[in-house]
Image (tube, rainbow, N blue to C red):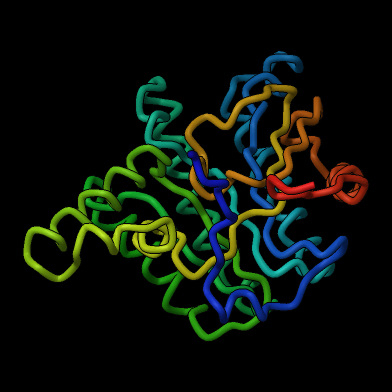
Length: 252
């Protein structure tokens, strides 16, 4: 007989985090539509990415005002490397400029920056910037702003499984200790509560390898708004839609 799957409990410290509107603790956003936004205006795609950074600034500030403890954005997937080299270079440059120019403002707003994703293949200067952002804001107690960069959920789950397999092989763990909770502790999001809500802009309706384990019981809002046009009103509308949902976690 198959047992019912229970929601994976979060880290106790995270459970005590203050909740935002509608009881929200964690929202994930798949920022989609930058290229289409630019094409609609007869502009090169890079202009859409630049406008998308402006939209991100406004959304992060609104999250700070709302008091939602965690925000995770899908900034660059492990599959994005297959895009044209010029576009990849532009995206990496935008991330670097965002950290250099916005880190002081985030720090002043008591935002803690956390970066998830594979770093071994990244350039030394980019890794240094990511580490600087995390170190400078590590003691901040406001919004935890999680940046999923060079991130893929399948790769994350495989890495967690490999780490547990190595622990069993070396005797630090027994097979019986491989549980949902143990796997969650080996993910890059360990200590972060699972997302209550995932928003995807531009009308697409898929996860695209984003937080697949963590999103098992998340609610989804798919909005036709292209990311550069996603403002405070669009975010409030998504939160209002979430507020009308009834979460049952597999129960009645």
